[in-house]
Image 1 (cartoon, rainbow, N blue to C red):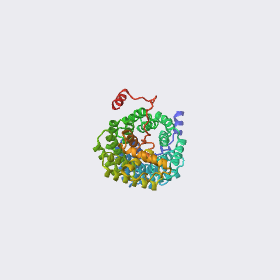
Image 2: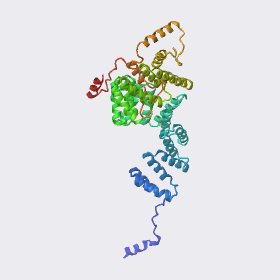
Image 3: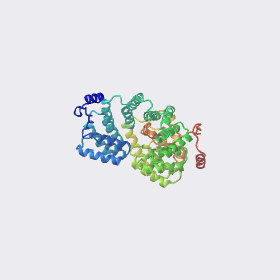
Image 4: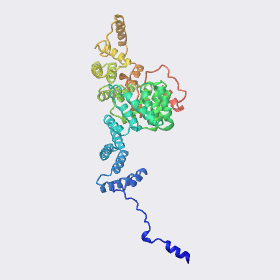
Length: 456
């Protein structure tokens, strides 16, 4: 009985018991964010878009997170312009958020607006100075920006990539970009060292194997180059730059049928690049299909408004076919492009191009020296030049080997890169060697070796 009385005394009335606290209610702007995030990471984009639509209707379009995720989904679906507009809306709602500015810059980059992307990335860097992704993306933008007359661009790119690697030394994207820039400047061994590190992280990357192949090509190890490029082509069969590079390698090895195959495939994916038609015309010329070669040269001259090598090689073909009037017209067009390049940028011209142009100029009787060459002061050397030109007139201009060399260095007249750093490298090959050196580490398969023997 005493225990029962004690219990009754110590029992707390229901009204005095502490009630459990209610979970805090999220503001209406954010109450569905968790569900949007859940659907997004599960990649259930249709359900995610439905929740986003409902959330934006309830908040009258002021839910920043819903707009942000909608922009990400638009980008995944390929609607880059729509995603840019939504990210810009996010940046207006939260102007001090560096992530919003990064996404705006990323969309600008994907649209090819590299200058605008750099400006936005710089604004984002002011808000977050220790973000390695901003440094990396700035480096990539500076590399893609083709303002070659502006000094210090590559130095800035190296600095930003170096900062990115300082914050994250294992980031394979920054390493790949740095290796590609080293490759652009001819440091093939150093670039290959970088690529070995990247290969451990992403062994199935098409840009990686493409760049490795072009490094071997720069080292004149053509069998290894073809092996790596074919692996890149297997991983990304619709990448026109890989097909372009395969065409260059086969053209340099005088395997014109294979070069025609890969260059034709590249043209199907990139039909507005004049250099592709020029290289295709070289392959057709060496396959003795002159009429189609002329058509390819004509298309190349129509599309390319700045490369004098297109008109030079077209003129050589026309001259060898006895069409001197057409050859003269192409030669004069080439001179216009050379004068324009000289006036606008300090570029170096390939010695083989200059030599071929001198021979053609003498053959067409338009002068002994071209507009980009210095006058000969030594009378003896001038006499030797005249005798060489006279002997050159006795045989057709542009033998198969010389023409193949000139065409395979399509970008050589400017001594500058024309590729994508951190992506697929598009590189000019060196001159043809007398005997290609074998590569001990990468070997061609028996099927590939037999195909190469048949073509030779």
